[in-house]
Structures are given as C-alpha cells and as structure tokens.
Image (cartoon, rainbow, N blue to C red; front, side, top):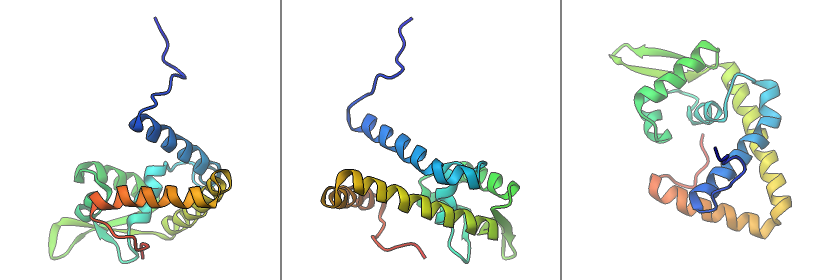
Length: 153
C-alpha cells in the first residue's frame, strides 16, 4: 500500500487547505491553553453572534452551514457554557442564541490569537505582500458572500 502522507496537493484548493491547517495550528498556540474544548470553527461561530444575539437561521446563513449543522455547534457551545439559547415567545420554532460571559472571553482570546497570527504572517511576508494578500482574500471572499468590508459589531 502506498502512503499519501506528506504529499501536498498544490492546486488552489490544496493550497487553501494547507493555509487553513497552518492558521488553525497558529491560532491553537493561543486558544487551546485557555479553551481546550473549542475548535477554530466554534470560535468563528462565537464571533458571528452579535451582542443582542441571533437566530440560528440567520447564523447558519452567514456561516454557510445548514440550520441542523449550526444547531449542533450551538448545542455543543451551550453544553459547555459559551452560549445560551431560548425559544422566542412569539414563535417557538425560532431559537435565539446569545453569548455568555465565557463566550465573550473566548471571542477576546480568539481575536488576540488572530491578531498575533496576522502579525506573524505580516513579518514573514512583509507589509506590502501581506496587505495585498488580505486585499485579494477580501475581494474573493466577500464578493460571493454578499458581505461588506465592515467590522462586526
């Protein structure tokens, strides 16, 4: 049997996969010590939840996930104390998800980790190449998602 371990796929999808693997590893240096029960996908979901909370349907749309898949993430986060969810009085089918203080703390740690990774990558690439990389990522990522370049509130 032939092993495929260590054989990178160098087309765009493979390169993006390698980049995400590196991002997760670089972030884990900061986040795992504080929140070993959270993956990068959990941290990203926590970042998407506004202060006033959000409906699962809306979060699923923004995250590009199914309602069921996102609901499983929310259930996990709720069991671990990062969010609370409740059914709306006016429509019991709708769950409103709100971060707890622990969820807010996880977002702060995640934001710090991302800033540290960005600083490391900026140092590695140089400011001009890093800024170009970010601009290209924004152009490609935001155009299809119907998002704006405005920071989350």
